[in-house]
Image 1: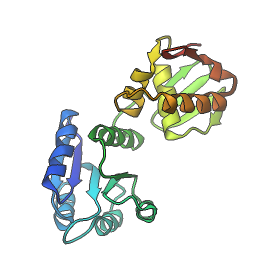
Image 2: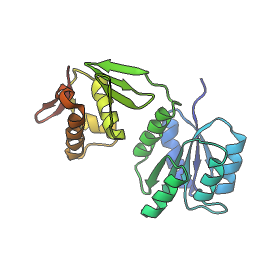
Image 3: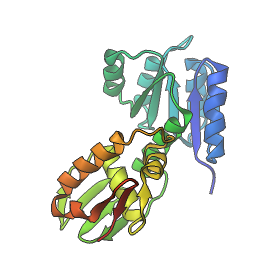
Image 4: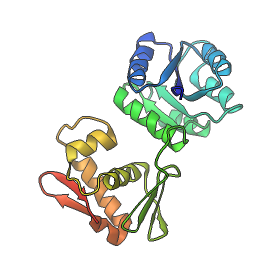
Amino acid sequence: MENIKILVVDDESRMRKLVKDFLVKQNYDVLEAGDGEEALDIFYQNKGIALIILDVMMPKLDGWEVCKEIRSYSDVPIIMLTAKGDERDELLGFELGVDEYISKPFSPKILVARVEAILRRSNVIGADAVISVGGIEIDKAAHQVTIDGRPIELSFKEFELLTYFVENKGIALSREKILNNVWNYDYFGDARTIDTHVKKLRSKMGDKGDYIHTIWGMGYKFEV
């Protein structure tokens, strides 16, 4: 099977290299473009591109113009990169059909995690169709969870957290391990992110929330 193709578009060569190096480590094929016009040329010449990482501020054609052009032909997933933290830019991006929006500077590990999550959502990366345990059914491809046949609404991170727990049922998981695998960044001693998400997840799961056991001073364990 051929590696998945990703197009990285940024006028800064150092930024392209940084992103490319991290993606290549995960066995993606990376195509590069230094401006908007080149990006469109490459996109139309390579029909197998599975995802585009697109900078906003570029010469010739900016990221918004490239996004509009591509969206008129294709629904390929697009991650927009921008140095601006302006909410209006973010809203514009989603209106144009952008799938994710990441502000610079960013962690390359986080970017790779977002790439993989989007590719899973769009079924480019395969996943076990359905996981079932203790009345909980997780459809990874559809990104849906049902409990005793009743669908529950989970945020993207809550879904990933529950999936990680279920796939590691019976195993004591430290907060460090959960952060590294679900949030994809190194542990710096602040466990509030995990604890807050676990609290919300338990609440949404009703009685099944009791399957997530707290291991005091360490982390959590999912056990039916």
